[in-house]
Image (cartoon, rainbow, N blue to C red):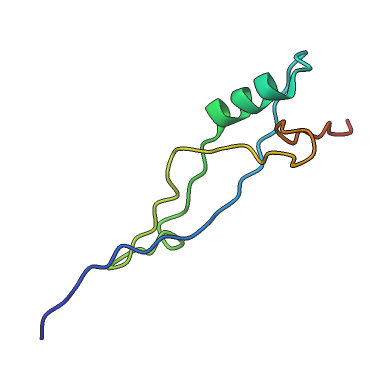
Length: 76
């Protein structure tokens, strides 16, 4: 019987912690996008026949009211 490979897409999120003296949300979001490096273990990625790629392009969530990236200061 024939086998078919079918690319499927989904949506994923990642949260990146950025340590910087920068205060501009645009620049902080850019630093976060550069630092993003998610990965999956072999089993979670599908192991054998199926595979999952989380990609390498990440866009910040944009606040609808301000039009700027959402950036939240973490408590130490």
